[in-house]
Length: 400
Image (tube, rainbow, N blue to C red; front, side, top):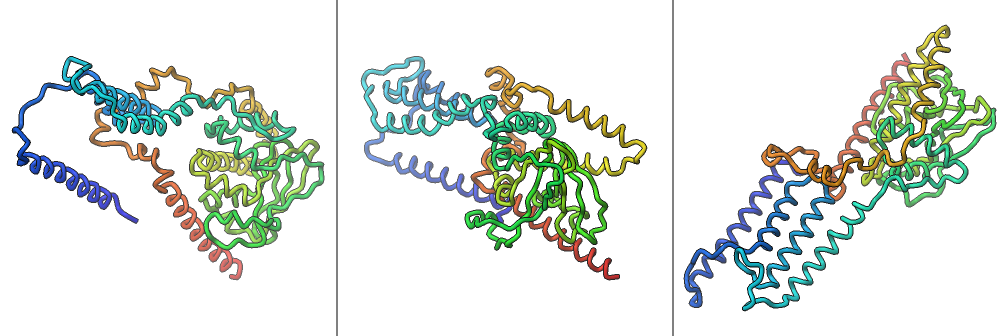
């Protein structure tokens, strides 16, 4: 993998070669017989100046939509300047060489198509209009989105993918659930190039109700209860998202769970569905999912440490928390709340950014360059290595 110093060196070499080429052309042209010598020309006209100002703005902005807007306006003005006779200051028209430049017009149209169309779609996009197609569970999906938004800031657009990839089910008391199942034929889901086992993990989120859980025998874990807002097999899911745990290393088999009360509603994700979520690098879903699972697991672990005499207090507080996080929330909560001119002003870089730009500015290109994917795959590889080492320690300790 190339280092930042290598990237800089390649950039510097490329810039030097380009500059040298331009200078060579200038020297070559200076000795042509039809060249009458260098003179200082008048400043170019207002259209040219406006075009350069917009191109300058494109380099001072962080928001891709505003960058595209500046590029579009800059190209429109430079096209007008060329067609209207490359007038000098302060004129905007020079009749002797005004002409229709088809090549300039074609390039301008192509450039506008490449920038204006996505720009308009970006400005037009309204996260509040996203609906969740989950059959009879739209109300529950809205409540879960409100809770997850308050925990992680996940937009409705990203939550829609997560919600619709899961299977929403209302289960009767006594229904047994396993965190493993036979893998269905999904040869198209080879996300990381590894050979898939015939058994796959499945994950559950408790929307309403509760489950009584029995950890695998020999794991050293105690039976426990999970309720609304928590995940079944959260430790395996956290490992899938790049966070290993001692609890997972101690597991010797799948966790078994049983529905404990009437009206229990769960969301079930297969391994294939969860892979689509965690490898969705063009959305905020993987990061938000990691935050949600971690925070929900922390709540669950804390509950198990509360003494029996105080558990009623915890239950009351947890009930109020769930009521608050699932309370009504405007659907435009994840939308831009500032006026357009405020967005424009705030997306301009500071003077310091010109010399010391934030590394986060490259996130714009992370999907195309592959840096997010490489970073995440590297994180998963390290997590697998750590888990394997912890499991070796657990096995040796049991044998001793």
